[in-house]
Amino acid sequence: MESEGTDDYETLISTTDADLLKRSWRNEKAAPEILQFQSSLVQRSREQIQLMEETVEELIANDEDPLTVSLYQMDIDRTLFLLRSYLRTRLQKIEKFMFHIQKAEDLWARLSRQEQKFAKQSIEDLKTHLEQSVLSKLPDRYQSHLKQSVISEEADMGIFFYLNCTYIQICMFANNLISMFS
Amino acid sequence: MAKYYDIDDILADEELVPAVFLEAVNGVGLLQSNETNRIEPRSKVELPFWLASELHLRQAASVNVPPCYNKKTREEIGADGAHVDLRSRCSYFYQLGCKIVQLIGDKTIGSLLLVAFQIRYKEVLIKAHTSASILGPKFLSLLTKEETKLYDAAKSSTAAFKSWRMGGPRFQKASVLGRKRKPIGE
Amino acid sequence: MYGRKASQLLKEFVSGEPGQLTGFNNDVFAQVIEECDGNILHLQALLRKMQEEGSNNQTNKNADHFGALVHHLSLVRNKRCLMAYVYNRAEVIQNLGWTIKHADLPAAVKEKLSISENEYFGKHSSNLQSYMLDLNLDLAVDMVPPKDPYIKVRVLEEIGEVLLSDQIANLAMHSILFLKRIDAESFISQGKMEELTS
Image (cartoon, rainbow over the protein chains, first blue to last red):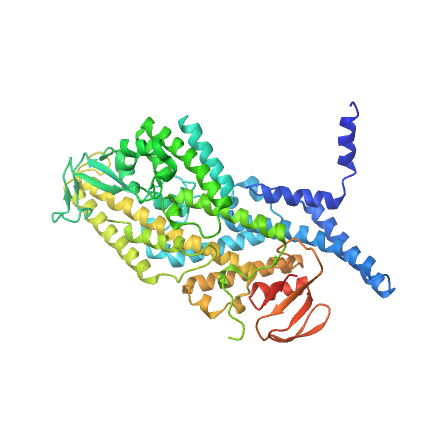
């Protein structure tokens, strides 16, 4: 019983990069907001993938057992999937909440350099699109994409993180009902 | 406004609510049978919630509880909640209800919403998880927008679970291209 | 009633299948903009009238003040509807960028987009491409967790000879073949192939 703490500790330090990547991926998928970019983990995973790819090429060159080769290949595939899905999930959050992320310094700092570049460009593009389609056609004092009109005291057109899952939304909705009224 | 771009929130605001003007209003074509374009105080009108609530907050009009939360609905919900046609009364029964409560603080609406939701939620889930894909459209036509969403969500998660268990194609055509595929040979 | 037309736009948007677009409704959109122009004219006229009468819009809340308020609220409401229409459509367009390259967009989908939306799609998907290029990693594949390296597919459209990552294949219509999952994925999302399961 007393060793429980040390067991946890041991699993913690023996965790491989594959496990860490899986954990980061899962966290990113489940979290409504964007999390800190795992820059060194991503870097290491990519090196790992490259190394394994070289190994596979070597195995093929040496006419190794196809089963061994395909096991290696499947391992690469899995890691690649986790990596891609992790990066993709983050980009999709950026797409959805770009105006909000841009405004909040702490969130902005969580993005990688490339993600920041992507976010900046996305904001630029969407802003241009909204301006061309709607804002330029409205009267002067209603043309901001952050304020409803010039008399708004603060940016009141924000879009904040919300859970992109209908079930959770409904649960929260029901919860609201309960907390408001019972 | 956190939900600025939320279409459901916008459409819930479009629902009509009864209101009484407390002030005169000049130069607006709100009422169709009005040639002077002036609204007199004490005029009774139905206004979309987005307008009524703002006028209410500025004491230019006073919002009343919409008829869909009246005694009759309350009694019907109490008798057989799952089969009351809420949609024809108000497509955003719950969302509008919450907004009304926040605006005019009628405490009785809250319990009505809660009771209705609890009874009907169970029914919606059971129907979504068990019935064959073609469900009598009659049941669906009773549901509010919020309930329909819930039904669809439950339905698609059941379908996803089934397809996961049975195996089957996992790669799908981009949804924007339409669901049906061209018949072969066309 | 003010704002009614604008909400029609949104009703039309939600009535479509999720993830798909109906044609951009230029007509109704223009009508809403017209309504906004009407609102601002009335608003300005009322404010001018108050100024001429020497009454202050902030302190003297007369019938003209409330008239101006109604027009202001209607403008803000119409703006919200129009913005939500364009914004929610833009979200669908963003998702498009993950599955289809700008050049591959079928004409049937293209004509549903407004001019600005078309431009936005092009810009956004090249932004996405340049991110992937920076990383030297294609993120548009591996959309579902991998099982087998190879999958069985049926070709639905004549594609012809193509250089794949491990072979040169003749992708003739109706043919059934085993392809590398990564190679097949984009053809499937474009609707040119379908996955077969035994």
